[in-house]
Length: 251
Image (cartoon, rainbow, N blue to C red):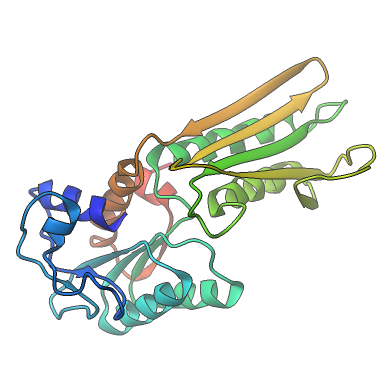
């Protein structure tokens, strides 16, 4: 994601790339970010320190780094697009706290299509919630073999949306053995990890006699990068506060 952000930000005439951050242990430190991203030199060396003159930070990292970045941005009043997933409740609280001091766009997915799909899923759940024979909701997500959290933060957000509208109270992660009859108040999650899949989410509404599905598929990581860049442009225009991709997309 960092490499694609470097490439796409460098190609955007309305933005200036001023930093590319890695951990202090990265073997890439000191290398030109553009060379690493495959676009040629851009005059920005990869560093572990955030420079002084920064308007907005886009963070795709790991939970420990995300909380540190959120605290740094809050202290320095730098707008933040927080795209890291897998945060614990305590880590999430730190990110949310930073929104008291700066503008923060915080979302489980930066994909523009995913966020539109979330709105569609909410509308579907609201319309189907009172069917006399009930609706079974299953969420299947697919990602690359290197993803460390499961199910994805995006899948969990889809489930949260459905539960808010339909009232399910049980979130079951996979099934095995003699599970018995499917409970009415359950949402099922299934995580597939394979190859270099950049992300797919399938939300299934199963009814007696018919099925409806909302399906969104990312073809390249650029889908997340473009969304994050849109969020960054939004964040730098806003006062301190917590924002979502719904705000960015005016949904």
